[in-house]
Every structure is written in structure tokens, then in C-alpha cells.
Image (cartoon, rainbow, N blue to C red; front, side, top):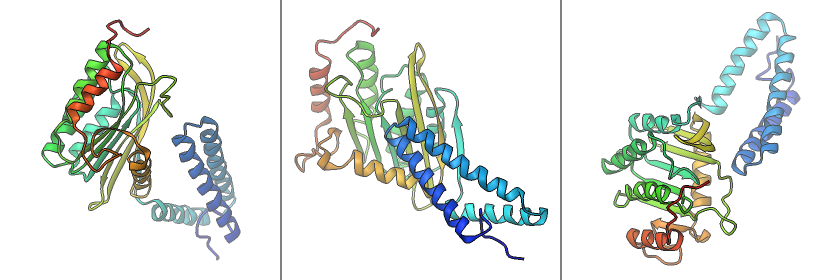
Length: 290
């Protein structure tokens, strides 16, 4: 009895399904990164369609053959993707709880954060999460930290929270922080409702990324949902994109800690923070945003 390796009865079917699933997966990630809901939806539908088609083909096989194919499918998926764990972020503060739990799992070579909104969030879990990250940098349980934060609108309470949180990383070792100006017509933020936290330990092959989808602001903070993935194939791709796109010196980004993109010198944290306050928060609006 001839046994197929995975998915289809014939090699041509195998190749077709591999290509379909590959294109759908790349399309899904592309839709996610460029905030294109149509592309993301179509990619997921294509992926589901490919899986459904193969399930129908599998059900037409004899019982013994189906069991053999299921075993082969599991083995092939494990070989292709490695160990993958996915956890949903259901509550708004679960993003920060997941981050704190990841810090407790062991040492990390790198932790990256991209947060275009939320630095000024009123969430009670955000400060403990950032203080834990600060401490792990001091204790060298995290060897390197790179963060990109969006600045809040001109409102006294929001700026006070954001400023205090940025100052947590004023002197932490091996830290680079870039910032995005407050969003307005001159400084629109790409995908303002998408953020993530990346954890990497290449020596132990431990990788984790937490994607967060930020919704409307409430009295208790921003609404959030999302998911966390642990996988040694997917997470390094996201981390590599982060390095190339958000920390490329040629992008002339706004630097709070790290090297000045226009020279070889390191910027001075206090001077940059003072210039931010002067430029965006003087005079400071003391009324709450509508």
C-alpha cells in the first residue's frame, strides 16, 4: 500500500497544498503587519479552505489509512513548525500578565516592545510589568531591551504616567528606546492599534511573542485582546523584522536612549526628555481629553 507523506494522495496534491498554505500564512502575516483587514481575512479563509479540502480528502480514505495519515500529518507538522504553543489574550490586562510570566520562565537574551499607544494607559497591571522588566535588566536576567513607544496626547495626567514609565529605563543596562511623536495630521501612526512584546533566548531555543490588539480607552485603561505564540520558527522572523524596520539608523527615528542616528554619539536621556516636554507638552493641557 502506497502511503502519502502529508495532505494529498499524490505528490502534485502535496505540492499544491504546501504552496496554498504557505501563501495563506505569508498573506496573514503581511495583513497583520500592514493592518490590512481584507488581506488578513482572505488569507485566513484561504488557509481554512485548504485545511477543509484536505480533511474531506482524508475522510474518503479507509479507516486504517486515515489513522496512518493522521500520524504522518502530526509528524510532518511538528517537523515543519517545531513545537508551537498558542494562548489567547482574553482580558485587557492579560498582555502584561503574560509578559510578567514570561520573565519568570528564565533568562532572556532580548526583550523587544512595540507600543504605539498605551504608554499612558491607566491599567493597574502595566506598572508592575514595566517594573519587573526594569528589575530583570538590572539583575541581567534580560541581557538587552529595545522599546518603541508612542507618546500620549497633550494631557497632564497622560503625560505624567508616560514620563514616569519612560524614566524607569533611564539607567538600565543595554537599553535602547525610540519614540513616536504624539499622533496628529503631521505624525500619523501606522497600525496604531497593534503592539507586541518579543522574548528571545537563542541558546535555549526559547521564543515567545505576544500580539496585542488595542481598542477603545475606558476608565480602567485600554481594551485589549490578542494572542501569544511560542515557536522557534515564527518568532525570530518577527524579531528580525523589528530590528530591520524599527531600529535601522537610516530611518532617522526619534531616539530617547541609544545612538543618535545622525552621529556616532549616544543621546542624553534627560536632554531628550526635556526637549520632548518642551515641544509637545508646553503649554500642558490640564483638561481631560474628550
